[in-house]
Figure (cartoon, rainbow, N blue to C red):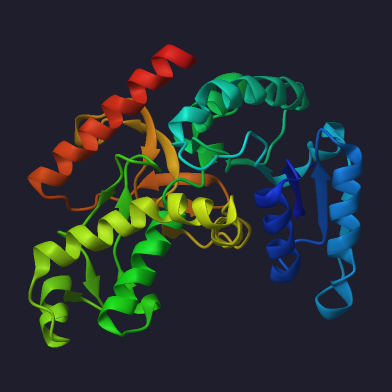
Length: 313
């Protein structure tokens, strides 16, 4: 029977441990199972995070094995090789597809009823790998996708406009990577079209600003990895946000990575589009308005991902 108060994290590296810490603070779960190829690593992270529980809420955080995740409401897979300085997310494909094949071989026999959330990179390809190897239905397999990229876009726009980033409504869609698309055509600040709001704040060189901000979002991970060798806090908060939408059945609109069938002429590709996320996982795409140029860029992003998946899966 599904335990809505239980989550599991597979992979206790930087992203997995940061996600565990964020979930401990969230109060969403009463049990968190940590799984890693090194049992000692999982035990150490569980012990370290558990020492913060007197400042949070009661929770059982422990190392475990795959048999313990069968009833978890959310199974978060962060395991994989880390992105190195100068390396793209796509460069990780061969290494991490092999890792995912072995992980899904452990998960498939368990007949899990929860949501499988893929966080490892390249997240779109690995989400498709998880779909293919796990045997789970499409709605219950999703990737963290461009949830973090979208947060980065909102943050940078908030800084640019000197306004609360929570009032910025804009999406990054497509690949979580170099072919991602900033959707400027529908971007707004509390309902005010983005260009109009920019002019309210004294910014008039829209094309240059949009290009600069979109490039900053795209290159954020490279910059962070160059400076500190890994990114993990932002994505950990993204994991927490997705889990909130699932466990609370919020029906929130989040740009998670999922299998696309027919939207904008795309079929059979896994990438990020705004979707309704709730207790049943990805419950449907939101028909976002895109310009002709954005549609073309999205189809190009999908073609790139389909080509990689065709070669590697």
